Amino acid sequence: MHLADANKPTLIAAQIDPGKPNSNMANAHAEIGVIQQAYDAGLTQGENMTIVVRGESVCSYCSSALGKAANKSGLDSLTVVNTKKIVQKN
Image 1 (tube, rainbow, N blue to C red):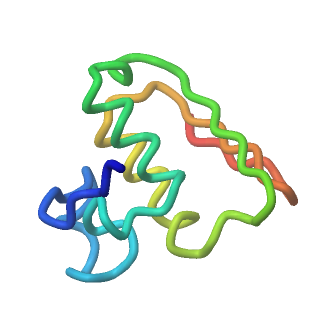
Image 2: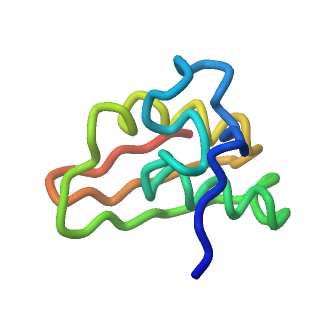
């Protein structure tokens, strides 16, 4: 079983208080984690990404962090399809 690394900061760690959600890969929520993993794999620069969130709404931590993570990763655009609404960063 692969466990997320609490010592690995997320792309937006410098903008988040230590220990708060999305500050490291062990406490990163799925939306931030998927952007981080795509970035680490070299798949984000100049690309468009769509994330579909099912089962729960995007939380307030992620709502405020998604645009920051998209910018830091080099994405051209990010669309988050939420159970209640669509959030876009262009």
